[in-house]
Image 1 (cartoon, rainbow, N blue to C red):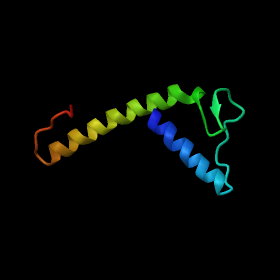
Image 2 (cartoon, rainbow, N blue to C red):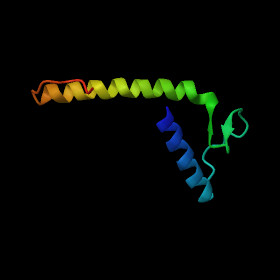
Image 3 (cartoon, rainbow, N blue to C red):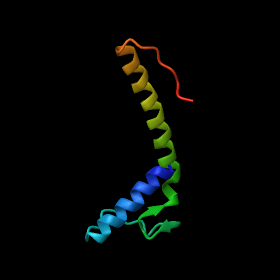
Length: 74
């Protein structure tokens, strides 16, 4: 979630500096310069968990295709 917020904030600042206003959260509470808002934190957290699950599944499939044993990272 923090990584997603960081990317969203930095890219939003870059777009704004370039004269583009792709998103604007200034009308929502708990926003930081209108680039990010904590209102969406539960959504980004759930998305991050889903992406972690997808990543593990892809790793297992790749290991199976390569006929190698799969070991969970520690």
